[in-house]
Length: 468
Ligand SMILES: Nc1ncnc2c1ncn2[C@@H]1O[C@H](COP(=O)(O)OP(=O)(O)OP(=O)(O)O)[C@@H](O)[C@H]1O
Ligand SMILES: [Mg+2]
Image (cartoon, rainbow, N blue to C red; front, side):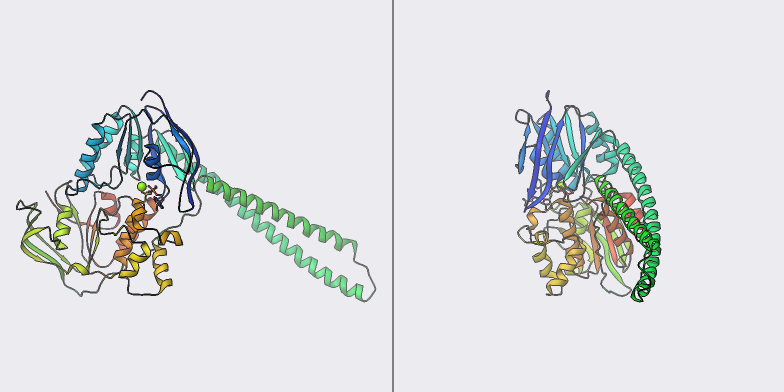
């Protein structure tokens, strides 16, 4: 790639909603661009526009014709029988083997263990060409990036510099705007107080004036007229303050501090008394006669929480599938486990979702109410709020939206056991914080797979079961 690619005035819209409008930018050969923004903001779609897979509503990408793209999608559909991390590595190798001029990676760290993530970050730093990387992973963002494209509210902010500088820049602006807001609130209070005082006095003198006028003794006194001017001028001051407040709110929203709508969902635990929920002894499991899991011994009591640790390909997800009694899994040993319908399972690939159904249909089928408003309120907590959001086939949903509807499916029931496989993949910061909160309060039995050790620590899981 010896010439830049120009993105010229692009807009993107689906189902009448505008995701991006009038975005222009250039991509130069050594740019390492991070594409960030909330779930559903249009990041994956923008990558697809740049590589020519989908067309924008308007605008065009110039200079992309003679260029080789290496692309690794967010949800990899090929290589069905590889683990998450293995799938990614395979897909990345395929992309690199094309000797691409530009590499487009969509949430590349999703399934990676520490070692694989380190080697990915090294590759990103040493790649000779341009890169655009969609990610919510702060470690990657801090270490590998020199330009930020931040999609926010239909616009993209471009920042040339490192991620830390970008965050500091936002923080500084937030402080100064917040300070301005604080002063403004104080001013507003004072003006309000003096306005009230003035109104009270005006009312009082008006009453007095009316009384005297009705007794035909006095016309309105000059002093009272003056006071009414004073009241008008306090009103003017108040209007000025309202204008300033609106202006500050605009500025806040321009730098990304609009009030963000956060998820509100919770998870209920099924009541199963004080007993053993899972008991596996001398457990073996695998897809063929060659066992992936050997001599597993573990047990889980009600209310107990356990993290399953192990590098990519060690069989963490296989353990979950064995507990779920998946027919393709062969197993031996003693597996004393709940019935599959009593288990709430978050599949790391969300493959139990039916792409042809909408979120509304998906939840209606499993929740124990037929009341339309209750179902809509339930979906609302998972941020499926508008008609077009609850009625859009799941096949069109973004990665984070798929994660949310998968969680909604679990929450619509009251399982005895939760099996959570890589919940932090694909979800944005707000949703991650909320999941952290929900899981740390969850009272039932839970097994959780995650490469994100900070997350595990934050939800207070200290028992671990390691697969070697
Ligand atoms: N073909 C389509 N028809 C209708 N809506 C679509 C279509 N493709 C994507 N969308 C919607 O467009 C929005 C942006 O999707 P996109 O996948 O680009 O988001 P994203 O920023 O990558 O999100 P995430 O962080 O969750 O991966 C989402 O709300 C998604 O549901
Ligand atoms: Mg995406």
